[in-house]
Image (cartoon, rainbow, N blue to C red; front, side, top):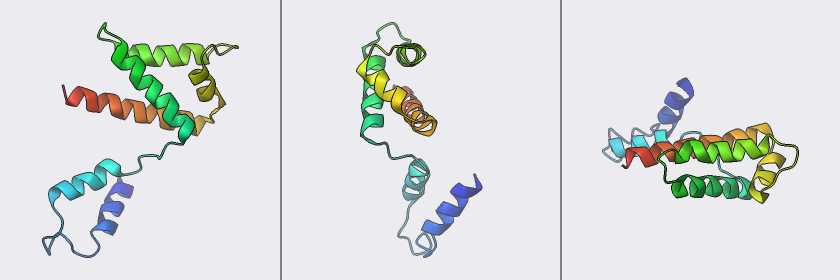
Length: 113
């Protein structure tokens, strides 16, 4: 959390709020964008696939279904899907970034319902 505070202080270093140039919405955008990883092309493909799986699942558990589908195939010796093959070729950090982005997107979907 202290890194977030430092980032806000850095971006507010010019006393933009006191001058009336920055609103609470601007500060919220700083917080939202804080440390969100930029995904590479393969990570974006996996994320888009997860989103598609989630939205196509009609039984109300699309989020869990999408994760299960990805991780179940990933846990096998022979990956059966080109998307899970991409996931399997990623290093641990890249996989976590994709899953983190998917979780953030899933939470946004819930908030908009």
